[in-house]
Length: 283
Image 1 (cartoon, rainbow, N blue to C red):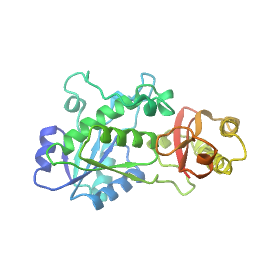
Image 2 (image 1 turned 90 degrees about the horizontal axis):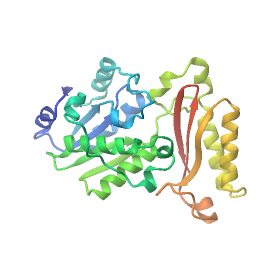
Image 3 (image 1 turned 180 degrees about the horizontal axis):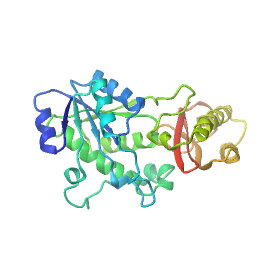
């Protein structure tokens, strides 16, 4: 695996090597990330991963400085997974001057759910993803970018950005990787104490019950969502949202027929102790 740090090094490494398949990460890699790398190897002629902890998507009170950085272990995992190129820019490489130009996503998609509780988050995500796409694909004529479904809203925001800017990038989604008990794999799971880890499946279980009850259509959705919030809070969590939305636009189901028949997704975010977890379930 070749490790490069600057845009010039990356573009030189990509020259003449075919269509790239790209996996952007913030490091602290787990099997979920590696499943994206495995999918990228199937889709592109050369597999590229990036590790960059993006300051722009952290709010002032969030964990940018303490976000886990596990460089040596990450490199070994990527080598073992068959990654060809690791792009690991330093902050001055990706942001050599203050990033005063930002990508502002559609508020209808980006200011709901995660965006309501983390204002500006998706602006930071879109800005760094646009810059990474430019770094990886500008000299290759396009390629594939692989994202996980765990960050469901992020996936949709990026897809919409690619569509609106007519970027030569095919965005491919991979199902959420889960532990044996069903917990969605996340870098932030490492913040959980042993006791909290035993409780962490409650978020997924509440979403499963919410989806089942919503599909039946027998109780108003707002009541079901409020009931789910109360149930999770009773288990010691601090939920931000537990909601059922249409998959194609993340708006609430348009009518009773959509609730019982349309492709939907149940999404949730909640804090267990000091650790904020997210999950979702398509149904």
